[in-house]
Image (cartoon, rainbow, N blue to C red; front, side, top):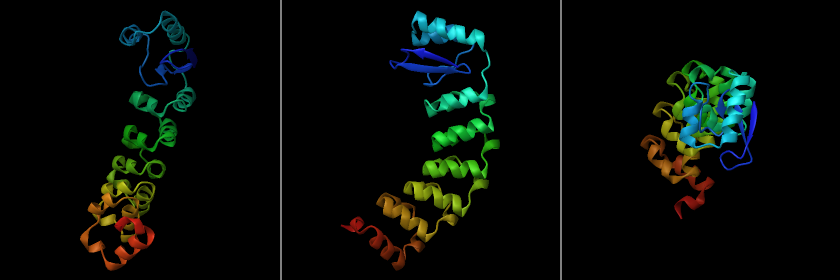
Length: 196
């Protein structure tokens, strides 16, 4: 791991495993010069990166995971072979929507639940075989608009009430047969401002 000064206008940038933690570039020996030309980096920055690459062409997973703590967007820049199960858990722990870039083989029930509890809209990246009532309810609790990603057969009245209380825009995702008197009573009780 290498700490670089004054890159991206900030005090520090971490280069780990050949990746800029700010997500702007992927460095390896063959492409480094092309990347430098594209981003017009300083001579000092160029020397720092080349020194780092020469010393450690392949950093360990721990350093890559550490780099995620600086910027969760770093994950989407990683090539597939660097996206190990541990790396995927770390990335989803930083931001649930990173589930989008997790290889399908690693989208376990546990990882999908972790993703939707952080960001309900990550439900759109969950494989169909992983959908459960509990997972869908967790996603909608976190973000009512996640209701649009819940299969109609898994939408419950309680889940729909929560989504509508979160935003009346979610009403369009509620099936007519769920809009009972009890449904409207609960919405009005939990969010009386909805109909003012």
